[in-house]
Image 1 (cartoon, each protein chain N blue to C red):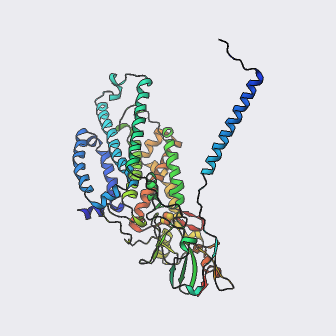
Image 2: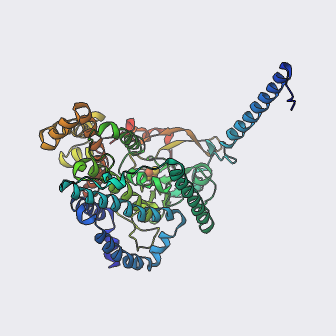
Image 3: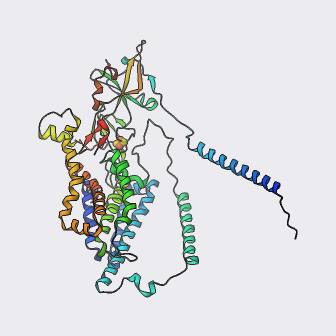
Length: 164
Length: 358
Ligand code: FES
């Protein structure tokens, strides 16, 4: 039985083709895997938005900007402020319970007063507040890049609320 | 009766009850580890389970697709706890009579080839496991929810079932502790066990008498601090992570009055009747001192006891401190749970300014 022999040159071209194919397949697979690790839909709330005029708000918690921007607008004791909706324990999203007048976190049961102060559950510190300012047109601009933390005494900062 | 069970299922009662039952089981392992006990237990638990299942609220929670694995787990755990105790009780009795353990009998020392004996068994296990998973996947639909949304969370928001023990732990701890430090210690500690345990007894056979501390310590962490917490997190935590008894309707508006206080607030506001000091470390001085006393003082105190001396002698200085440290960190969980229930104590050291809360 005559076995067909590859000569040196043919052997190397086979080897090259094989390696190129293998590398291409691996690279393709890896890029697919890489693409897979990015979500198809990625909803990131805006970091800055306009929230209507101060006169639009009634005393209490306003949930209009919660789902779109992750912010509760709260009007309490002559102050209007933007409260973050991220639990300070492990970052779940608490819900506002109008009947009990508190924010309650579904993950480990932390509770916050309307002002954002924590009083029950494991949350170690109050909810954060965001920077609010008035535009020349009299609208409220909420800037989520600047946060004000109660335990650092920052809630007295005039940028953290609007007097109404 | 149902009302009573709803009440005692609350961790405030069920945790001590469960702990006591655990220690009773360890103490009387020779009673528990008999076939007679197992049959009696089964004979009692079947009608009790049926009675539980007759309750619409209970069955709703049990049959929730997420919870099926935990039902299976609970049954398996009961059996897998009993079985080694049974084996150990048998061997301990033989050892006391001066006989060798069952595993050392000639008929049990016979050797077989890995191929085909082991490989065939494994093959069948793989096939059976696959069939089981396929059937399961057909019967129970995957509980998929809506796409992730950073401004909204389901209520109750539950971790995967195997993490529910951790989630329950987070109720009592800062995320840094219960999310990073303690799980890290659990993993490291489990890896370290073979290096810490120098006891040659119990190698290749079941026994309890020769390994009391090792078995009790491990089983307490496993059964009470892990499995029990998973059960609580799964079946007894409803909306807002509020406690609901097994027969209780998951009412979204159930209010549990709870007001948690840090140790520093107890000290300055309540006991000393002054205002909180400005310097954060002075403010938390008591908590920091207590933590150090717990972590550093306790190993030395335990050296004074007979148990500590024995352990030190058996395993050597280095191992002794590592073992005690691991035991102490494990103990921090029940301690913090009890303090929370009794005094609504939130954090012993509360330094939110630098994200450190113990
Ligand atoms: S994340 Fe809100 S209580 Fe833990």
